Length: 611
Image 1 (cartoon, rainbow, N blue to C red):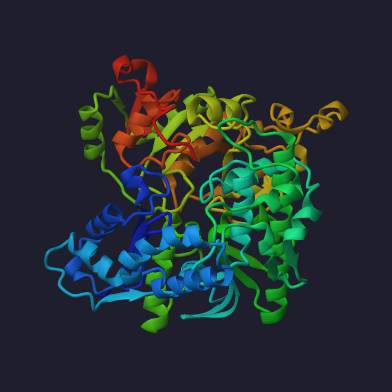
Image 2: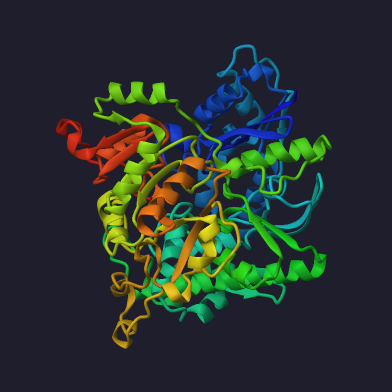
């Protein structure tokens, strides 16, 4: 038996995973344990969890692998500062002390941290380092259901690479091409995230959600900043950016080009300008990704595509690549960001370095991405009792029946079942659920439960067998990483007057039979649910369909704005008591908000730093 511990840390979304004989046993992000969103610190809790789940002590682990190479990253920083000198001196002087003290000697730092898990862990000879983008590519190819695939990775920056093309076949994976820093699609998107007043490395999906409210009227101006070639390769004009050496993403030249300063989220509301910027940024991103996809399909003549890296979380762009039919099949790593690098590094070590054979699973090897913590019924009841919860325990059939009944009556439900998801999406393990047929569900969940911007869309979880009756697609989307349009016979067309409305005024117009999950452009970010990966969730949606004729429920992550997804029954109860959720269904227990001790109510509006 060979065990490999994979670690990603020290930038954002720290995580750990464990493989035994090449099989993924457990994986989790550190943020779920510390309750700090995108926690970049050493993933002590995540490592403790994956070790205990695998029933291993650290001294029994065969190999440990880190998801990137610190020396290469340091080289890139030094060369960048020299190239831009003297402009970047302030940023340089802030970055260097921590690099010289900690990050450059990461093997030593890791060894000292690892020793805290197990006093019998004596040597650093089993610590290895993977390349950042190879880790991303490996996380996408090795768990995929393909013998052979082209792998496209795109994010902010790893060591030098920002975009790579790799080719995977059986247990081999080779990076063929790279685009290097400072030319980065991820950083271009982050620059506009910053410019529209959202937080870099966490608010990019808000920019994507805002885009359908705008018109891409700034597309040509964005193309002043980025020179896009026919094959999708690109260069960013550094005169407009500040991220290479500065402490902000953009500069005055950038602001002058678009005619406004970056939005201050504390003082300024989102306007039509910001919606149009979002629409334009999204359109340029899609153009680059589609051109890259077409070019690599033509060059390598391989019918399967795998995607990873932060840009692969742009489910709208993914949906456009799918719609163009460039590849026969697409598979996207559900933990596409840096958290998934821990998994990719471990898989790369197992398959590429050790040359271990790969068995391809016709679905994939991610186990539905349910790779995190789980609690048995006794543990759930003990935790609920210790926090003073009032709950009722039901048998399985009654639990499913009652929950579906509450959903059909437009109740908002916290749903905590089985293992926690690995990656940024709740997939029916740690979810908030609602009725998609409700006119008010989207607005109410955003404002009363999530405490976030009203424009943010929700995802439909749909029974796989009913997918093509409701949406213009028939492709598996178990990880909520593809967008497709609502079927035309389910749409409610807008009147001429409604079409004249601008921006957020479009939000309250009913667009389909399932308005709570229909975005303003008639699209939806779909999660397909099958019996094999999540039977309990599948049974709930099936029972809801039996009662209502609708095989879909609203699914959003179980948290409030700025909070990581809940991890433990106590987290779930605290979130339940801090929001206007009506019921909490956790294991076989149901909690009714009206029956809880009023003194346990929490103020969650101010509990977490806004993202």
